[in-house]
Amino acid sequence: MWEKINEKFKKYPARIRVAEKMIELGLSVNDDGKVYCGNLKISDKALATAANVDRRAIKSTIEVINEDEELYNLFNNIIPAGTLLKNIAKNLELGVIEIEVGQESEGILAITTNLIAKKGIGIRQAYAEDTELQETPKLTIITEEPVKGDLINEFLKINGVTRVSIY
Image: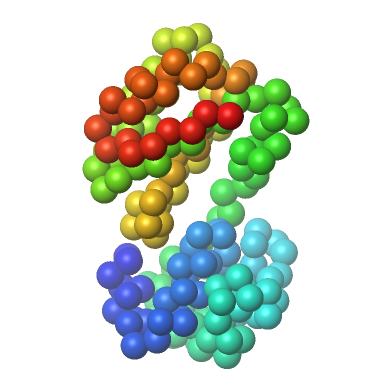
């Protein structure tokens, strides 16, 4: 699908940024041609600011999406992922593990969660950024309790892991 998006918008970098920002934030195009996050309508100005583009780029991007059945089906069916607990984990006495990955990212989630489970720690949430959308994608794992630093070395042994932070 990324090829389709890049093909449709390749001459218009602002439109690519709009499409990428919509996917990143879980924004969809509704039947009325407006942009939504769930059932909350997002203004063109707000999306333009977030994507760092002129408001006209929002309208032209939506027009292209509405005219292309495949793109419309993609952008009409996007659902926001929900709340990422990372920024409030400390308030909830949860742990946060943030793992930066390189191009080789296959199996990192499975290996990481296995290492955490072996320590008897429950996992509350896992969020993996798209390796095609992000320059330095991160896997964020929220645990039922803070994780000890001795796991950092274990995580760093996993093929494709470039950096680990625990907080």
